[in-house]
Image (cartoon, rainbow, N blue to C red):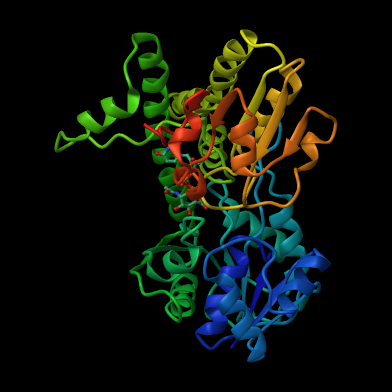
Length: 410
Ligand code: SAJ
């Protein structure tokens, strides 16, 4: 049983690792030679708790290898990015490229699973791309020339991927019922959760729905944080109290919503049916407005100081990871360096070694250690609830202007 996993990112690599751990022969495929080399050396090019142990182990056993070319395999798992374009339409070019890479290796009987999150109809589109290149094969089941297409959206939470990959229930949407069954049999090798079979369109929409649900609920919390600011009410106390109601469960406000999922996926619903997605679109707008609100607050305080030094704590899109993709905290820190005028920004991000390129144009910013930054700062701006920030000795904040966007030091 050979499985090719196309795309060795935050989802593809853990998926390849757990499949190899379950005894499959897994070939990971990635366009980045750096990633291919890292995996073949048994290492992981990003931070994810527990992943490196499994990668190192399965590579050492010869169960997991990586390469740039798509190999022949019995099953293919496509796990490549689906960013959105300027108009919030999904960019399917990575999925299409993966499909074109798979097409020439097929001989009939293979399963092709799309894991990437994508708008309704994308699994069908992936099948079309492959079958256009291979008119000798068919999506109709039961023939020697049959291909089986399915969507198995991932639902793992960064930071807990190795646990959730195995434990979470999984939606499996086949283009045909036979495809869903083949997909189920493959995923049953590593997934202890329930495997829920449906059609591919419903599976695609289910994944988007889960993330839109979370986005809408975070937007509610963020909207409350803006309302309470004007009322002189502590939003975290408010939410804690309201959540004692047996049927109320409000999420937490913060500096905005980031990452490559919750800040992206709802747009795929909106772009599929703009007219009927009013609440989902508004939630996106509320969450996207939060960084500017935080920035305005910091700049208002900085205005009253001469050459202010601001310690910006955290760049990642959430706690205890090194992922800066679509991070509101990073965007706030970059905008701050641009708009602070004579001041200095001390960025503290324990999970990285160098500032990302967005800061390159500025000379009023440096990557600093936590204690040093807090000591030198006039304003301490907490942007991410990383553990080391939680553990900070509060006495060190006594003389400072503190802007705590996560309610960490309440
Ligand atoms: N956030 C808040 N307040 C909250 C919770 C989160 O402001 O109460 C912010 C976070 O700081 C972060 C963003 O929202 O910026 C997203 O973080 P997250 O932890 O909610 O979710 P992700 O993006 O790490 O992972 C989500 C998960 N989806 C759901 O919980 C419905 C995960 O299960 C999915 O697999 C993942 O998206 C994905 O890949 O789609």
